Image 1 (tube, rainbow, N blue to C red):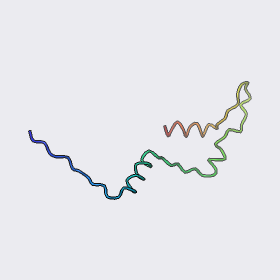
Image 2 (cartoon, rainbow, N blue to C red; image 1 turned 60 degrees about the horizontal axis):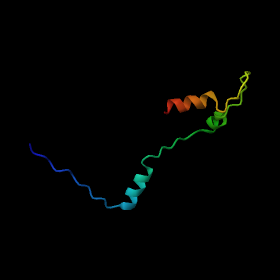
Image 3 (tube, one colour; image 1 turned 45 degrees about the vertical axis):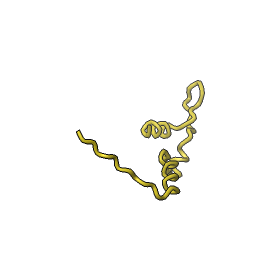
Image 4 (cartoon, rainbow, N blue to C red; image 1 turned 180 degrees about the horizontal axis):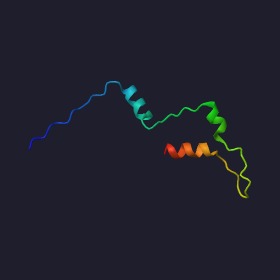
Length: 66
């Protein structure tokens, strides 16, 4: 069996490489003002206990994007 040598990449722009490594795990989400206004729950459930902190739309968004 013959093995092929791995290709070596030379990094020439270290500033760009370091910026890429820092931002590699970064995810940015953009929200409209309507979504931000509806993020916190304002409706009362009518039941006893602690009131909801987040709206159903906010909880659904988090579950979908997990």
